[in-house]
Length: 242
Image 1 (spheres, one colour):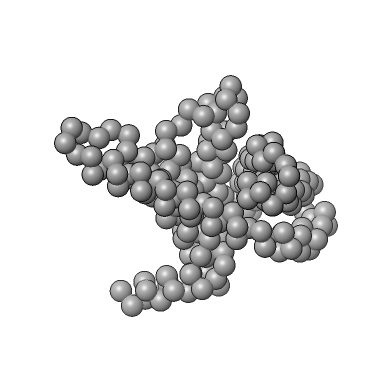
Image 2 (cartoon, rainbow, N blue to C red):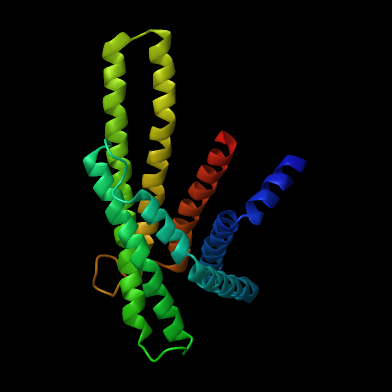
């Protein structure tokens, strides 16, 4: 119990950790609120009221995350500059996918900031087109991130095949298998998380684009909760490795 509490406190003390916790609670509230408000049995109006309150709570947490992202541009720019065109000697396809992913992420933030400022009446602009552009950039980033994970899995499998030819059944081979299987599982979780978020990104696109606007609140919450929990698991695993 004490270790769990300390782990939660350490997570909340970091910006990224707090954002992931807020994101999980946000989508979890939308999931439960959507279920409760969707179908209310006769004589049970309290369930619908609780569902609506949870949906409002989820919307406030989402707005909170949008405001906090106003300060993410510089950290993203620093990461993009440090990555540049990728390390020399690495796989070319992986490098260019990562570069395009960084570009999409970098452009996402100012577009979202303009949309937020327009909604807040800070600037004279129509927020709808800026929200659309930021959502499209987010979706593009998710697609590129998925392609990057697939490419990494392909490269890891190639290395495993080389190790198998070098000495199958040896202690070195078994150790190599273990070392490469862990990042492969991590990339598979990343793909699952990206696909869950991408389904929501498409839902928030204009009507007529695939399943845009057709998700009920509980389904949006479910997809977001899946992606958020995977993010928490990966962050905890990364902290444990360190």
